[in-house]
Length: 149
Ligand code: CU
Image: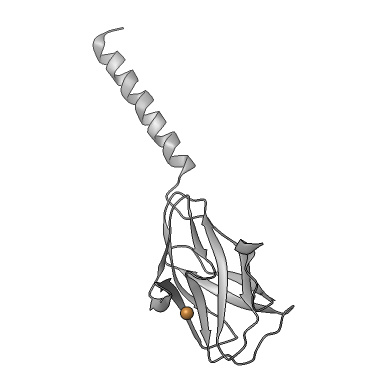
């Protein structure tokens, strides 16, 4: 075996490893929604909470939310106890986007009706890369907070 073929072998081996690495993280987001709920609203405003898990090899962004409950649905972050609208939320590769009480949330204004505990509210999450995901938010009691159970 001369020096040239040895080098070629090493190159082939390292390229093989690179390709194997790529196939386990194929550069697309792989999104799954868990823990969704809506506290029963006490006015014509409601909030929605959920976790978007990304098991894929690329990050994505939640860009908008739509729902038959309201024509005015936005995404908000909470900083220093004040909330403000944002244009998108990052869903990191191998990580998750957490919408939880006291933090980031989905905001529904001008509700067409007030959903009651035990009902569900359907929403559609829209992402920069992944296709839209439909989620049914179960309506929980107004003070419901899974993080405090
Ligand atoms: Cu808000």
